[in-house]
Length: 88
Image 1 (spheres, rainbow, N blue to C red):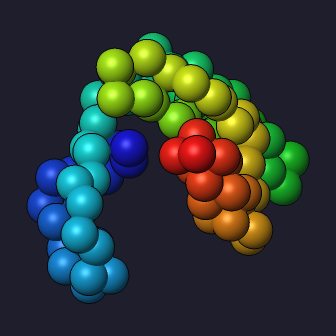
Image 2 (cartoon, one colour):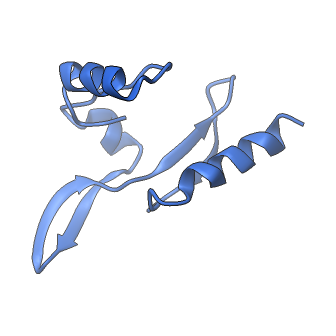
């Protein structure tokens, strides 16, 4: 989920040739509910923003696992390993 607009998400999806839906939350309502809208500190400045996090949501709609404060590098393989475990 991103705070980007629906239009920006559609453009990103097309450019990246993604085959799954992307979620847009420009008002941060759902992002806040998931605890991913937090105070951030960068170069001596404080601002509110999205803290990169991942949530594994099962077929029943329940959250099965949460990865807070993730780094983009290496995280996709961590998710794939977890998904491989749950499909056994």
